[in-house]
Image (cartoon, rainbow, N blue to C red):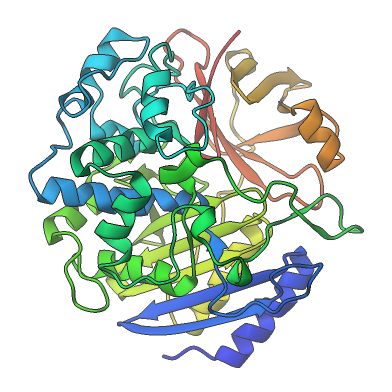
Length: 458
């Protein structure tokens, strides 16, 4: 079955208008055949049309690229996923002596290291990842090593990048070009914003109200500290070249081997459970999320910067991958609707709906109440009239810019004893999912949402 491109393009244009997202570039790789299209504008002020050559920020999808480069080191026998990081970075130290001695690359790839992102200000120079490693000598644990999954936005993959730099004797940006971008023939993919052709680059947008519509983001790119975890820019075509490597046992579209078939299997099959399985999937592999769509295993890698978003879904059983890059959002309802239109048009399995709340559950509400917090995030869970509520506390400057109150209250609807739906507080939000779990001390120890873990503070 082939894709009805005019119909899909028209539908995407409707959805962009509905969700106030300026543009989307979408690619479908099916049985080795690439279909791509773009709809909308790269900037609401210039109204420059988006094309399939428009470059978008990929955000945390970058982690999958970094994982691929790291697996090349594994193929070369230069690193072992289960050897301590100290084997490769002898001075590696964090506040917890046990973590300092035992944390491995696998912990970093799977986000089970538990090290707080307390790396200070490492600057914007090429030595940024060396400085990050130096700066975390006093970084505390969010959770004990290997105890749970908790997403590391920048630090974990910066440590992996530093191992790559030490082994290759080059800075991370040069390592990525030599190891991945050039061998794969990726002429539109870069790891640092200064390398990007501004004439081809999409501009990020935020939305504060439906009436105002999308506005150009005041922050054009993430700090360099996010490089290995979030700073790659690319096109949907180049993103699908990465998907091709994972679908074809490590070979690029040109036929050139990038990583071994064994390394691809390791990336897909080495997994840890995710406390909140309902948002993206029940497990995390090496640089990839693992999902289950009605019995079909799906691998996901997503990313968000301040005003741009990326989505990639890989379905090995169907030999298919779908990529979407946008300069607005993120809105999960938009992503689901677009992808389901494409999947239905191809006669494939679609994305499952969220589980419905279970009104028969009789929860011991005081076990959930408390403050769950880490730097930059604070969640207050309280009970009232037999129901649980979550109050999100925003930074005042963030709240002022978004024209939102600095405290936003949500009702938590239980799906199970540890999992909840959090319906939106305004029309610009989607339903979110939350896990509150680990009752080893009689009350919940962690709150997990959007892949991030927040420990109980009181």
